[in-house]
Image (cartoon, rainbow, N blue to C red; front, top):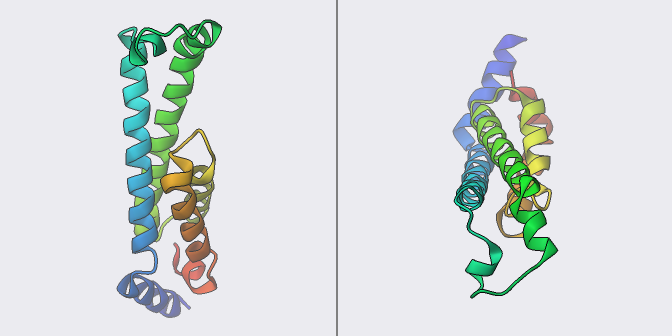
Length: 140
């Protein structure tokens, strides 16, 4: 029984079926982390929307997005990005299938990652590959 699983893992690794999606997930997580870090730094030094857009006053929205909500959502985005990168590394090693599926779904959610540009296509690609019976069987 274990001989068949080891052979399946070898074939999956050699054909690179999970390599592409896992690299895409790592890139998605890295870009998301950079966006979140930028937001945290900008909010931390007090950079406001008005100063970014030539002195325009955004009123209540600027206060809301620049306060605790902005900092909290940026921090949560950073945590999710780190989770996506971790899960993608485990996916590349063919470990923790459930974790890889959760990270693929998180990558597709808007406002967590650069969704429509990177996260959505990579998340779909990742889920399609992860749902293949031979790939699922190769995970430890």
